[in-house]
Image 1: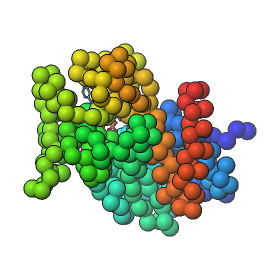
Image 2: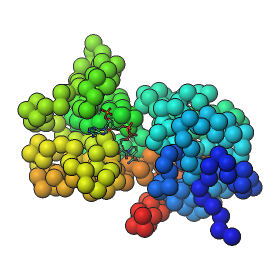
Image 3: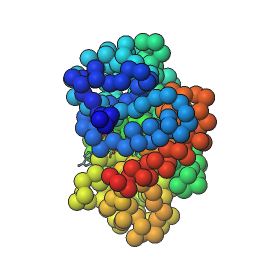
Image 4: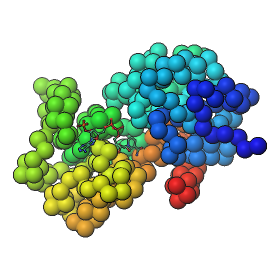
Length: 299
Ligand code: NAP
């Protein structure tokens, strides 16, 4: 009989307890490519472990986490919509979770849950790999200040980017984050109004444009930014892992582009190395890269 890779609170008791278990929690979760990456790493590096998906609605997350705390789960990732709520369920948050204001990785140390966020650092690795640039050397526009956008804006600012502009449909969220991060000695972080003439002027002084909204997830979604705003000197990164309308428009404008598959890879490799610190990160990344590419082709 084939081993199931997806569970719910009701079916979790059926999991094989003889192997250390890891998981990704979300709602929905069936689309997640994380099991392919993590199981390949466990297998190729000879580390005992099995990584599964768990579908859980947000109102039942506390119940699930209590079960996983005492169950043989040594760690887990969480994705939409659990990254904020998971912060409240951990016993300790490390600096990456506090800075990113979310948790995507939990390590279970004998019942003590330690929360981290690898999204920001994973994205820095992705920008280095895709554009051969360091985030700290770039002036950045983050479009979308939800969970991911907040983590990326925090990361860019803490890396030392001289300018971080925040653009969000709900202006107040971007404004609140800019105010929180801005200090008397460093003031290059600002919220922008979603206005074409304001954006045209501001984008002249931007190197890297990042889409961290959900626009582009659906096949017929328009470009999150008007195509006339994108210039050939821009680097355009879409956190969504496909060729979105934004990326098509950016290519037509002569800009360099990359999609979110690289961020998915690097946040996953960093999570794996939190659970298995002896595994060399470069080796984990390469094993995961091949598995992810294969799983992506089939998806
Ligand atoms: P989230 O917290 O729900 O945030 C969604 C963001 O999209 C908010 O800023 C929201 O603006 C904006 N938005 C939604 N609909 C919009 C519309 N019609 N017009 C303008 N803005 C709109 O979600 P998240 O977790 O941050 O995820 C955001 C994106 O990042 C998703 O596309 C996800 O796939 C991607 N992501 C990728 C990775 C990776 O590894 N590649 C990791 C994490 C996330 P409001 O604040 O106004 O609602």
